[in-house]
Image (cartoon, rainbow, N blue to C red):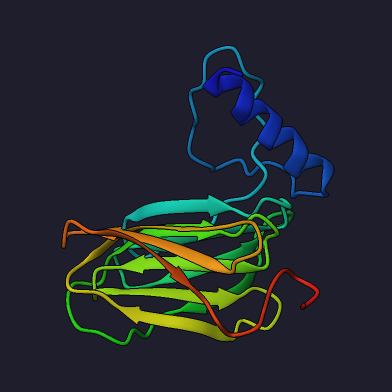
Amino acid sequence: PSRASALANASADLSEAGGEQPLDDAPAIDVVGVEQALVWTAQHSAKVWIVAVSPDGALVAAGDYANAVVVYDAADGHVVWEKRTWSGKGAPFTWGLRFSGDSGSLAIGHWDSYAYVYDTASWRERAAIKRGDRVYSVALDKTGAHLAVGGRDKIAIVYALEDGRHGRGGA
C-alpha cells in the first residue's frame, strides 16, 4: 500500500478505537488524496525526533530532544508512562523506539550509549545495555526475547534478553 493509504488506515483504526474529536486549533496536515481526521495531539517541550506505534495499536511512543520518551494511549492521547532519567551521560536525544511484535516490550535507543527495554504491562526496566557509543537504532523480535542494536560504534549486534519474560502473558 502507498504511504498515504497506510496513514489513512492508521487514522481510521485509531478513530474506531474511540479517539477524540479533531481540535479547531490543531496544526494542518497536508496529505494528498486522504481524508484527514485528527485523533489527538500531544505537545512536547522540544523537537519530537521519533515515534512508534505498538503492533496492537494500543500505544504510541514519542522520543524528543528534551530527554523524554512519553508513551500515550493511542485512543485518546493520555500519558501512560514516561522516561526522563537515563543511565549514561551525553546529549538528551532519543534516536530509536520500537515495540516488540506482541506489543509487550518497548526498546529505546539513546544518545547516552544505552539501549533500554521496558515491559509495557508493568513498565519495569527489563534491560539497560551499555554500548561503546551512541545508540541510533533498536529492534525487538516478536516476543521481546531478542534485542538488535545499531549505533555510532559501527556495530550491529543482537542480544538475548534473559529475564524470563516472553510475550505479554509470560512464559
